[in-house]
Amino acid sequence: MTRRKQIYEGKAKVLFEGPEPGTLVQYFKDDATAFNNQKKGTITGKGVLNNRISEYLMLRLAEIGVPTHFVRRLNMREQLVKQVQIIPVEVVIRNVIAGSLAKRFGLEEGGALPRSIVEYYYKKDELGDPMVSEEHITAFGWASTQDLDDIMQLSLRVNDFLTGLFLGIGIRLIDFKLEFGRLYEGDEMRIVLADEISPDNCRLWDLKTNEKLDKDRFRRDLGKVEEAYQEVARRLGLLNEGASNDVRTPQVVK
Ligand code: UDP
Image 1: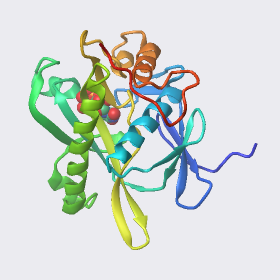
Image 2: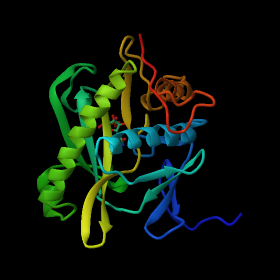
Image 3: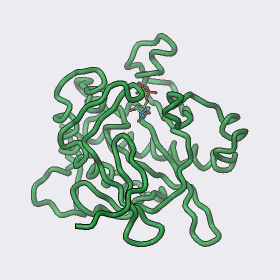
Image 4: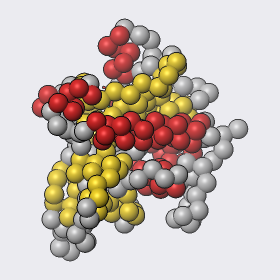
């Protein structure tokens, strides 16, 4: 089989040229990295699960009017996406104190924040993704004030929607990271949600037990990493054998 031309290889995904101009194929690997590449490993089956989970969440978001780069899933590990110009800013949205926020301010993990916090990080591995402010982003020309306005509005909408969606399946959405891109259609430019939404870039805690169902199991050597990703997919209703591709319902947790 002739392989498509590879455009880019990241830590967890590979991008190939798509079948038509303006599209890309996003391939999900099982590779996992943490602490800016210092910790490396494999989570068996992660690529397959993240492909499904991200497909599901992007489709649900598109249904409520959030523009995304997602077109359709092609197979177990690949999805077709629209080619966008990625804005080099990682947007982190936090609902509960955890991770670097806890560390930076000496706070205990698990406390609910009185309001959601949105943070920006410059997407640059060599520099360890430093935190930046709107001032840096606009001054360095990574995004305009208007772009940032769109990004903030979309991020908060995604947060509200996903918080509710996960609550319905007994999961607390603690924090997550989003990436956005510019989609050019004729003379028009739109900011759209890009990359992926999966347990690789979300913190997901079981509502009752606070058990971690995300990449922290790998980062912190908590074990049962594969099982955690599977559990998220299962609760989203994505592991039902024989279920139709389109009609999937999240499992209500009693
Ligand atoms: N995150 C991510 N990629 C990064 C950094 C963070 O996907 O390069 C996600 C991470 O999974 C978590 C949220 O963003 O859900 C907040 O991460 P935090 O700043 O606490 O950093 P961490 O503790 O992961 O170093």
